[in-house]
Image 1 (cartoon, rainbow, N blue to C red):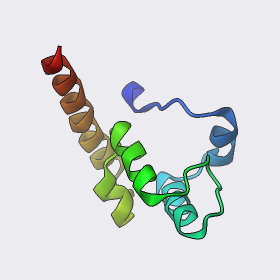
Image 2 (cartoon, rainbow, N blue to C red):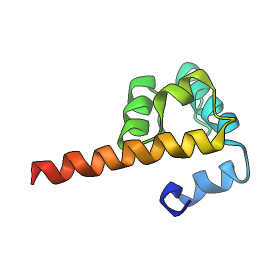
Image 3 (tube, rainbow, N blue to C red):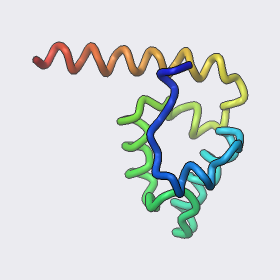
Image 4 (tube, rainbow, N blue to C red):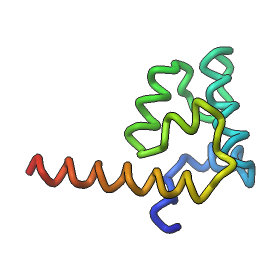
Length: 92
């Protein structure tokens, strides 16, 4: 899924490595609670949720930890990306 690629800082990408999304999203949520950053500098849950939204990541799936169905994740993300593109286009 070419559109599923995300640009991340090299240091974050190295830390994520080949971890399952459910694992690193869980740790990212935990860093907002602990204040101990593991992936990047986001330590506020509202900032994290806004970042996910801006990057068309299905927030409900991340919050529920329900990321084991990767095809469903991709399908939802495609819808979010299409909506974002449509909304942007309609603002022109």
